[in-house]
Image 1 (spheres, rainbow, N blue to C red):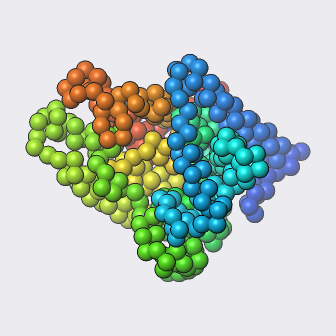
Image 2: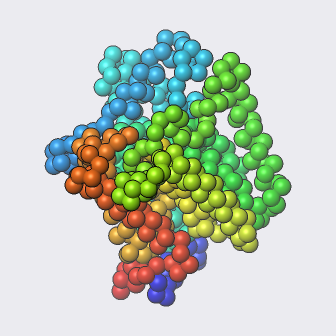
Image 3: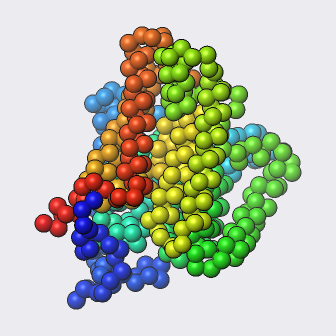
Length: 441
């Protein structure tokens, strides 16, 4: 990247602007960011986030004549019915979700009971997810102020708000809720509120597990200004306390509850075809005709996942100074590794790391383009291709047919695009073309 323009790129903690009220947020003073500008930015970001949802619904149904997937929300509704009849999850009936996911389910069920309407549940659940998504946008913006300038922080928030494929999954799945908790945890950590960060990340573990992947990186980040022992004890106490109250009572009655808190690997199911694992298998087995099974490829991928996560932890440990941007990069790579290497894949996993991507692409035109290219690929994957070219466990078309190769080529290009985007973010030389040069002209 070319020489940085300090006004546009560097973090926003500088001398104040004359005649302006400076921003104070979570005990941090932003002398060169005035409160009125921040309010205007937040209003634009919230409106952009909401508008994007409406556009996605319209384009999906009216332009592409595809569908809005209500399967998961219908499942949540079915899980809420016995809860309201006095039955307890994990004890009277088994579910596959962690306990705190019942917060949005229960809240959405209240208007459904009052109006005696399942559609009221659907709309209430969607509204709750949109509110979570708005909080994610706000977190992206305020984390961005600690990494970039006020202007680049705004654009980072705008890129997330207009991430249209992610917006589709916000409306149809529950993933905005745990992702919101993850972003709050990172926000607290970067603003020096270690305990609140640990509490948030731990709460995330009881919503959809993956936010807890940030916890060891937060510990290592905070240890730069205290000590590793201090932070391990602090985080460990909080995690143990929540386990005692939210997990132990159910586990004592029904030990199978423990399996809910293990990262999904598909159990006895085969390898999902929209995974990198199946894509590698298809080349090895069906294109190059090697005698190899999906299970063997999956085993190698899980070994690579473990190696990758250990390397990321080592990098976090070896880093000598607290660097918010590097913390975001490490958490991004860790979550992406979970998604990339596992054999079990749902398209909505995109929601988990899109806010982190939006934060880290905001300073560079090439990264921004790659960001939206991956959004296009993800949107085509689901809902546009699902049911026509693939379902969870197989391609629709016979091996060797033109449409089979088209499907394989699509997933190949999709994963290449994500890898290129990730590489452009984490490589030593920040970016190829800094768009801040153009903004400063």
